[in-house]
Image 1 (cartoon, rainbow, N blue to C red):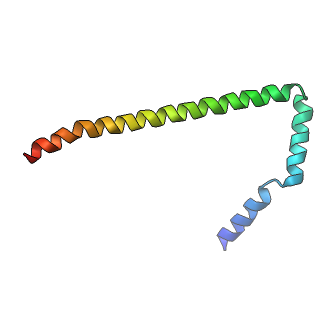
Image 2 (tube, rainbow, N blue to C red):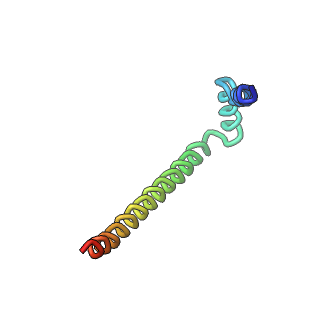
Length: 81
């Protein structure tokens, strides 16, 4: 019962279509039409840098696991002889 109550409260907290339009209108009025492209460009650069860092980290992790597998493989063959 508590889960249903929490779930229904969460759904009421999410903005609907009209609220999104109102938020966009306020942002447009607050930043002005000329600053919005600069704002979006900055957000895009931030997302790109984040994705590049994420891919770099994945590559480092994969390289580390491959290196660990390569160094541990000879030890297993030495013990089996």
